Length: 569
Image 1 (tube, helix red, strand yellow):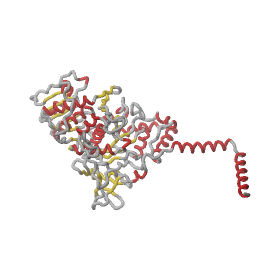
Image 2 (cartoon, one colour; image 1 turned 90 degrees about the vertical axis):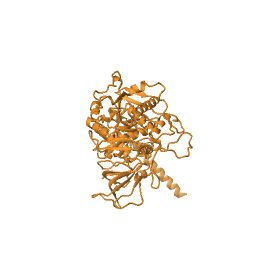
Image 3 (cartoon, rainbow, N blue to C red; image 1 turned 180 degrees about the vertical axis):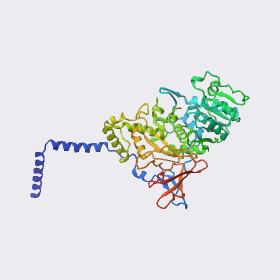
Image 4 (cartoon, helix red, strand yellow; image 1 turned 180 degrees about the horizontal axis):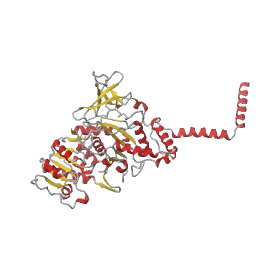
């Protein structure tokens, strides 16, 4: 007992001595310590994804051929399993356990008008289709009206003998409606990059052997085309509201009446009110024809014409849907904005994926040309958008130049630390509220934007985005960014960064993540770059069901990093 008595006596003396020396400085130190401890406890957040999932993002084949690297696949499509070939469409009445069809473009629109099929609070919900005109005028298109346009335009072109249909339009409802009309009425759709020189338009018409053109007045050189391309048989003008009173059915003199000219609006309004409200039946329909895309490396030049089959496109669409985590996939609560040209398959595939996911889609004809996110999103508040690296770099330059104060720079450092060290998107708080006024005004309602897609176009001279720039843009916009590698013969993307990959490296161009579930990537030796047991390096080869011709060499040299993500050498 003597030992415990002495221990308690010593403890009493120590406590008495401690509080006997207590002063204002001691109170300040303790208060600061308790405050820091409380802040760490209540603000601590688990990483958005487990770090080990970022450490090995693709699976390499166990063996490789001489002169080649192993074949790399997404972890979601491992070796021994088939790549993602389609949408797994379940027909009405089919067992929920049965394997669905791969589907095609017709199933995209059927799903868009049918609404969400999964059980839950969103069951039956459909997205909206919007057209943005100027800063305030937003037109909401009824899905039934678009279905009627698809049927009537498709039937009209087919009845007039149309077989190969050129779509020469800016981003618009009419472009998407014509694409679906070609799918439903067994015609080949040919999407041309918009606003091209006259000689380029004529060249593309000849190469594609088109017989029908759907276009807008003022952009299509009708007189020149008729004189230089006699194979044109049919023209459909898409006339805006201010020009409807004019006569657009006039045929230039000297053509001999060989071109049948009509307007989109006349085809719709001259048809019976009840005509075209029901889509053609699923049974007995032929496989949709190819969709032809012209790969444009630089403005004014068109280098390659690529024919994508229906299977190529649905495979690419499915892989973009499944590349997003289940809880983050597109749905009726999202508003999707393609702020890049729909003539690019990356943008087109993502837009079709949004339609299939029953997200709302907004079309702004000036957005792709502006290369400015503030202009592209004026008047609306998208939650997801596809844009160009040029537009992102412009936003980065403008926002970075505004972060001049010490407070702004330190707040940016804190948010960068959350992203890169803790693996979480910065959360809004009282501390960061002051920083919010410096963010770019790129939506009508700041804070709604949650996801941005951008792509490096192989061989097109696209400005490259470093991982540091992308990290800054995540903080500036409050949105996650997925950066893809795209090529002429790959529908959608060959590889794409992960949704939760926020890491920053010392690089001039960010990595492109792992392959998608519809692609596999292999690196073939070149004279200067060869694969060894320790490093995979060489010309990038892409294979898969979304590739035209099943396999393509991209003509650029890449390397598989230690985390099995693809990057330029």
